[in-house]
Length: 521
Image (cartoon, rainbow, N blue to C red):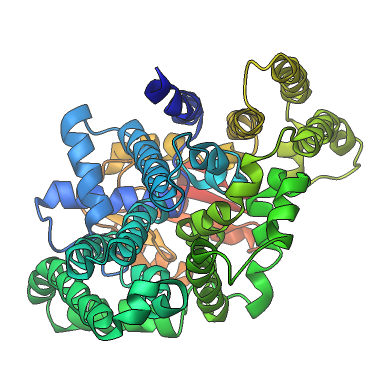
């Protein structure tokens, strides 16, 4: 019974995933692009060399696309199977962190699953079809192997396991897995007496583990590079590996960008006194576990801060380091009233927000969407909060589990309601259903195509892509061709309202764009 109780968090996570599967559309450009790559992989029957719009795709490694196709093979080709898959991946990540918790703290009652579910970072990104939770699984397993190597003295045994996890991490998201794991290995003499006493053996075992990781990764990369040709090989090994790690040319943000975000990642926990007590009482000298966690957390966070490219979800694999650091103090918490009060205030704000926005005289597409939110979700959330608090007073549920349930309830309700209002401008299913009627025609796409429709419209051949200024000449050349335009609101009206063109369908997109299907009259 105790064993079953330890996995009760799975019920809460499953209910959350079911809500998102039912309510959330595939979000462009990331989710739609990744499913298009997986769709082309399935269409071509080619599982080594990935393509996007028929061109070799080197931006991401193949593991996520392989898993999507496995789920499609079992559950049929649809948009729901990949989202369920990612929910299961995140559940496995949470389980891997619980293994790490038990390894370092020898806990029988596991708190890390509820800690993770109490974090907005997991609620926001945990079921989006992306690579970070998949990577986080292998980071957590790799970190566990590193700690076990130092704890048991079986360096080569556990570094072989580390090599396997690191290799799979490369197949999940590339060499960034080493940014998450190498610092704590290199700094091992600071936290491990075994590593300090046998430095040569430790670093030799590390090199052996890296060899294993390299073999696993190159098992895919070399055949793919040979098949893709010289340019693809350069993209794969230089631009998308060394270039992305060094120059970080995508998603550039300033050095300080992560600093204000980190508190948001663990927002409800900030309102508990035990969280701050944990940070105030960090003991470097007295606790090897604290040194281990700090040697994982601090240098890795510093490296990500120094990288130019930054996204909130890049830090998902690092989140357990912070949570495990504060876990012993949070375990002592008898009450988390501060976090409960935060959710009460947040629920009240959600209830009042639509009324406040409706008073604005002029509203953008975004503000109109949020003004259309139903105040009922705030009311239901407040009711759930109050009901849960009485359960808490009756000792029917633990404080931490209660905070996690509030977090999942809040984001589940928000996702469901925002999908109805704001995210309808990101839902490309209606446009794709119309586009599917023309998939056997010669198709053009004006602007940079990022796979928005490949999967959703079940396209069987690529678009001819071009700049927005070139589409009239393309239609002159292809008399029966079908053109997809992505038109910005501020652009001249004649781009879309050309008298020589027939508009077949149009759909508002994001906050300031419209997708249009046109052909020659």
